[in-house]
Length: 475
Image (cartoon, rainbow, N blue to C red; front, side):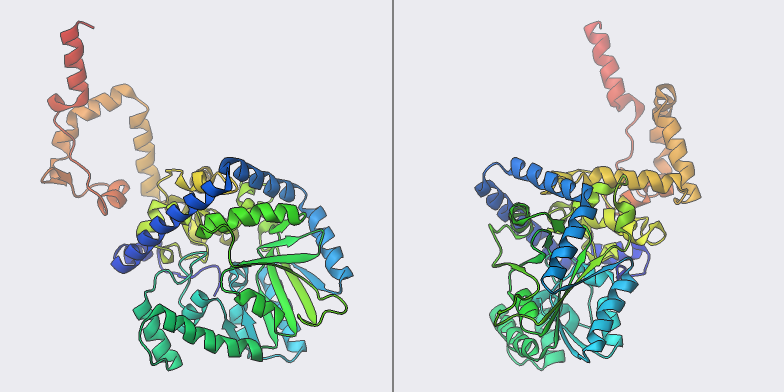
């Protein structure tokens, strides 16, 4: 899988999402549940706003000194006998990992959930190289068994599937013979995956945060599959975006607290692990450790007007409050990074040619900004994208004409007042039963999903009512 999960037009994808009532109900239910749990977990921590400020300061400090901390991380990993590789592009990153695996003549690979490995198309590269690659996160494993169905949520990738759909997938692909009980489905998957862990020659994980002064990585999981992926195979390869680093364990502790509470409403997830190259005398763990640090466009974001987007800790909290995500679902974004943060970073990593619609997939209500645990001004960054897209003339000629006309109309009180007088009679041909049902392209998106009332007659307007009140009171 790559950054792009669906090449169809944005309008086709959103139409599919709006028509999928099961997905919409599942997303709505998950949003409501996660919101309640997040609020409870955040309240239990004390002054949540101070924690958010601390998280923002840690992320900004690290980004401002990124070269120093990456150099410190590299030195400490190499001192402990590990290998570190800085990849400028996704091709460099996936090629390095493939070469390590080929040199070891390894064929059986297990992998834990990692968005950046999706970004660098690692699965595709390794399968093409003849490897048997198994996703070990339960949600990702379900999607893999369903012919690599794309994820729809950063934290809960199989959110769009119910237990009956999962039972069908397991029955067709894995000869599962039991019912759709979640416990039985999970027990079955665990039995299959346990054998895959034991057979694997290489384990590939992501990295929630690298700890610079330790030369180690931090994994945050709920299933324990990340620990098994890293610990059982003889070779462990971890992959991280270059910005996912903290100076010490003290900063890691703050961010782990923010991450767990914001992502799933837990004080801490079941497994919080710090690991790296094995030390002399260790009786378990991998014999070889590689850390691949991926740039893939992040250097261009660093120091730009979108610099704050690099503060993201991939908690998915912005998805869980977004009214647009609630209705169109994750697949409509066509990116492995859906929701508000996806609408910000996907165009930065993939360009406006393929993703110029995403910044407009927002009501700009700012709920995402309010909930972000590291205070990324997401709605403001979406506005920046929109401004750039307009400056680059990437909107249609008709849309530009209509927006200019609307701008002229709304900036002139006299012209606006005159227009209102004729709004009701002029709208008759576009209306039915008091609702606008057709009109210029500019309103198609709105009337396609919502009601737009026909303008009232001039004598019934608010302005007419106000003028009448002023006249009666003598003002």
